[in-house]
Length: 382
Image (cartoon, one colour):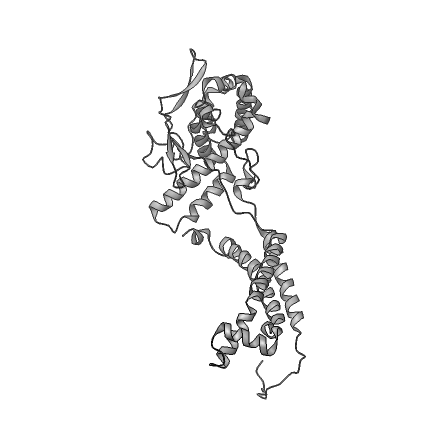
């Protein structure tokens, strides 16, 4: 409501807030904000795969895997791995959501560079799948790879899992049958494949790639496309195994990535030697270590140059008093004592300790928070 106004300024007298209270309040607010952002962070979609469990391991603790994924052994063929990767991008909600996020993060790049980045991401994604499959198929201590029967038994379990989780999707059974037809005959779970209803195996899917007569021109660029409908599986009585008809060239060509790491180019996309990786998420103890290290480092380094700072200040405030830095230091030490070269030590240690404690963890935190939560990943990539 309008009414008479008094324009006379009113002054309130309040006691000043102690600096220590301000510092403690700021630290408490930062801690609460950190915990809020940590608790609100959602799990990555790729970790929500319906098939098994996707987990991240510490790269520093990971052992070198010269025998973990022996590509020459063909326990998990590259073509099998890359087509399984495509299969999951289409049928699995977690993998599909992750891939959509990946593609969106490249949206601000030029078309050619965006396709390059997508190819590298798919190659690492397929590599992660291959490593996971190899670990599952080979068993503990890779004991299964010495027995065709055990490898085939593991692939039988995988077939059962895939059909159980995705078999109700339109066209999924056909794609699963095509996938297992890419295995060497000795590894194919033919007994289970023969039990699958023929109508389900030949049923066409809803994938945009399956509706094409031949391979779409962008098949090597769009990793969500699956084999066209004309490709079916056929049981070969002579070899007691399944093959793909019409015949398809499942090429596997060794290439080098930009990092000079070996990779394999397959019919269904690249297979990198490096699996997916991401930056480790920082916990509160990591930020505490950053603060302690920053405070100690800043205080120590600036304490060493206090004598130089004292002489520099004297020369700036009274030019001509000394002939130079060394003369100034010698004169001050002789006339005022060595302690004079350490004037301001307490303020320097306190100031730069707080600088290191606050700046280093704050920089790490806000860099991640702004780049990952406030802004679209596309800005960080671009």
